Length: 101
Image (tube, rainbow, N blue to C red; front, side, top):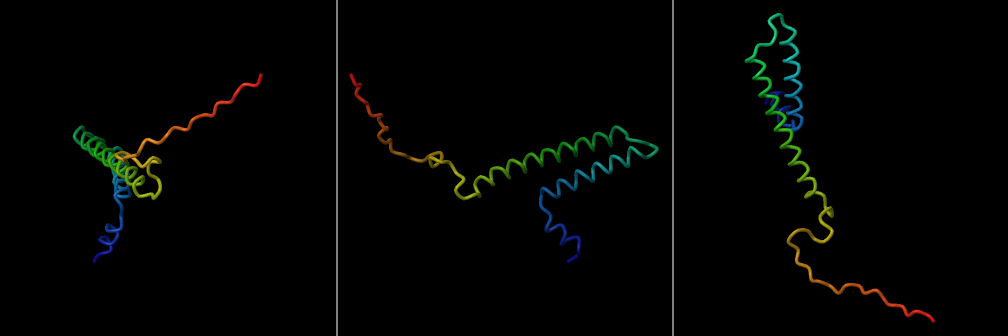
């Protein structure tokens, strides 16, 4: 295996998304520094890629938060969660005190 293959295997989706965002930023800076500058097609392509990266990041955050709740033991709902059948217990009655005369 090549070294690049080993690096790509261990890279997480979050790290990959961050790397692509940084690469896109540096590419845009280099294009703007050039004497020709940025044309409309290139700008629209970069904007499209930015939207894709933002959508991927949002999708990963949704997955991470839902998975984090499910993965932590004992961090569920206190009453057992949705769909738990519970018998109605007797409510605790407050004792009445007699007034002294």
